[in-house]
Length: 113
Length: 113
Image 1 (tube, chains in turn purple, cyan):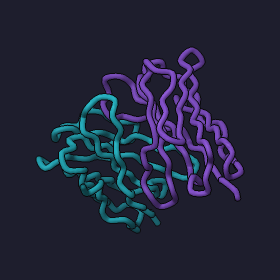
Image 2 (cartoon, helix red, strand yellow):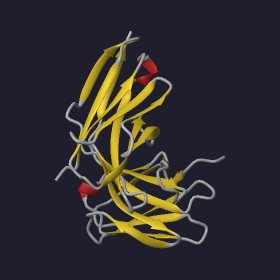
Image 3 (tube, helix red, strand yellow):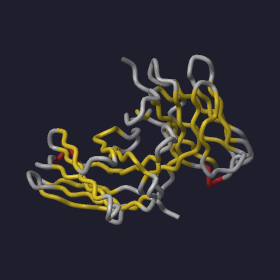
Image 4 (tube, helix red, strand yellow):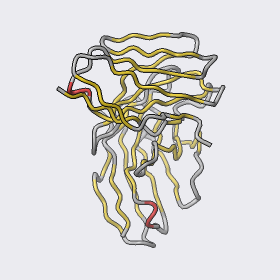
């Protein structure tokens, strides 16, 4: 049972355009969501997070939107840059379970010139 | 401030052997979690240690075990290695404060032959 799903394994976007990465979840107990970026042979790097009591969180070029009724998250990157090319993972964390994160399978973003 | 340090970075073991991986969290972080990443899979939660006690456990067989020392450093052990245990093993360090992110190390790439 995959509780966090990233249905697009890959995405290609032109430099300067918007990248939209999507994530769906099934576990209603999740109260905190995070996005991580990962380069090959490195550990994931934290990007941005959102609490379930909010519907939007913004940090520079990165914005995360949460639609609780649809159990859907999205990460917007504007404008996209070549250095953003990486694998992006979304993760959910249930309340009261400390650091236990349930990850999606990731979306590989390629930003082309 | 030093990040999360995992040793060794690469390891090759033979089926049936056992292996011990090490993780030093960020100074002051009391929670250490372990994750397994295999090709085509998202990161899967193994277990979490907080103040030397296992606090959460994922769905892995008993061959996977861990411990945490009084200085918060953690070790993960896998006994009777199988080919399917070949993976990137990631350690995450967390302060323990709610709604904050976990920081990952670069991982240990384990290959079982």
